[in-house]
Image (cartoon, rainbow, N blue to C red):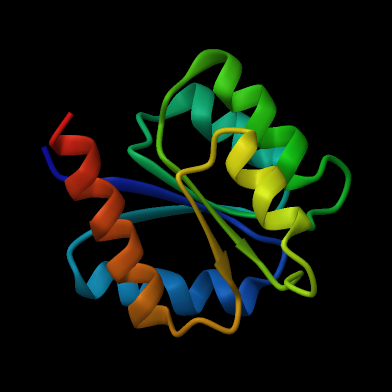
Length: 125
């Protein structure tokens, strides 16, 4: 079953819009939140098939939100972060249960490809 509903959680509206445009070109439905609280509300109200999650959010950070989500769901999570100076954050994100960790310098096309790769992997299970 394809990932129909994707949730982008990022406090930068430009990134949300760019990723929405690219995902919608591939026929995905995209919801967005600019902080963890908005994301948690959407997750309670909607069926979300994949989450693209920024690490550095206002208030509750992406790592904490990932941890909370993992207590209740196995929905695929792809971290998208500008913080890439060391591998520490990447390792932490993956250890918390993320399915991928993408650096924001990646092109939107690469990010869509990674969503598709996680979708394919998830369908194969």
